[in-house]
Length: 120
Length: 107
Image (cartoon, rainbow over all chains, first blue to last red; front, side, top):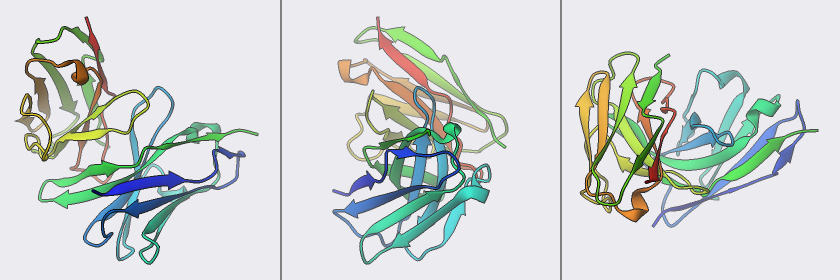
């Protein structure tokens, strides 16, 4: 059973970079893409971007200028950097395994999520 | 950008009821539509992908249908564990946009 676990600071100052890591266990990172998805408190879900095990990335155009996703397959981890953080980036951040089929991408395994607040 | 609109935004029903949730895309997305269930304080759970395919372990009382711009999620014979928030997600565009959610509450 694949498991994902997010880790990183719960508080980030405005204008700084929000950084999170997702550790994957119970399975190989090969053959899948790995996403970050966020959910502001009480609101809906927003896909941020994903990375393949080989390092190819795809980002949400709305966030692309501020997002970097990296992968370290030797550690079974991938990470998120979101630069120039503002209060609007306050959200629960989820990492998720992304399966791409003939009908596009869906997210079949998720981490439990971690709340990141952007505040001085 | 594709907008995904769910209706209703909230819904009250009783155990044993049959409920239908609708998701409408702002442009045609063929069958590129997925559904998730989320309970408070938990991560979403994949319920249906490619409009109507259930992953292993999802009860058969859940079903999905639709094509183009209009899609439905139906839950037959609601169980207590089905009371949650449901989200649709398009997998047609580069933005992988989610709907705003439908909160299913117990009557």
